[in-house]
Image (cartoon, rainbow, N blue to C red; front, side, top):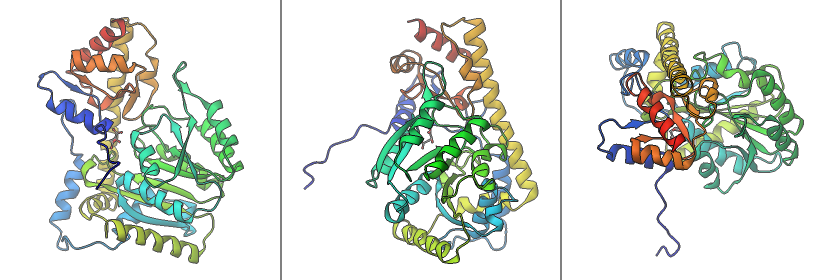
Length: 408
Ligand code: LMR
């Protein structure tokens, strides 16, 4: 019945997690999936989330009723403010349509379905950074969209290939779709500086390209929600971008609620047109209704409880600093061990300068394979390491193993 069907290899990230789980070596180290771990290598429930859960489930009106198709309105309203800013012009001018989604992945999927049907601004090719998050390609390819790439990472200098990036913006057909990582680029951990962002955004506007911002790590790059939203807010508040902007927002990482699938898609329309905004909202609703009926309630209510309570919001901001500063401390320790103690061949400066959850180590796929087979250290074959998997107990082992595979 299925003559062309073939079994696929395991997903690069979840397959890695399965191999890690099956490994019986007691000193194994998981630097695979981007999920925060505490200094004992354990999942961490953010104190803000714990407190919000108690507040939520003990409130009188707590229940498990269906949400509306758009999602939990008090969540959506605050989620838009988190990404756009409380003083956002777009919010004040009523130019934002928000729809709750199955985290960032669900938001990207809705964006793809929506653009495939309704975007006639130009070419329907979607440009992704090279490299990008492993899932981006298949989310859009599955929908039959044409996927292209733009240069991003210069492997020799371990820095941004700004020239390549800008020239690909210029040479892409007018009105193409560009997906940008709002901050904490996955997998490289390398973000443009604010000056570089400005250049990138001006060039995108000059070619009328449509931007999708994937915002999966707000608060993880700098520990500061405002700073990490720079590119998005600059494009909108300075009126740089005149085309609609799509934002795919995830709370999986910054609230540590990976499995609860809390997220939203926002479209910022350049003008306040009630008819257009209403039409977009109804089309989002149709996509959601046909695919998941209505969004999951629990996670969005927890995030909403945090965002709507000044004390919990303050606690959340502290939690973001706890996570981002522990990751930064690990970056410095790994760098110091490799550079000063072990004198490992190569330059490891990038481990310190990269931001967010990941470091693009520069280790080859052969070195990564050896890390797994000989040292029980798991990272994806691109050499991306989730720095959140390092802690005071394993960082020395990891540094020694990096040193061994580099010299091997
Ligand atoms: C990652 O890149 O490790 C995370 O975004 C987890 C995932 O879903 O791939």
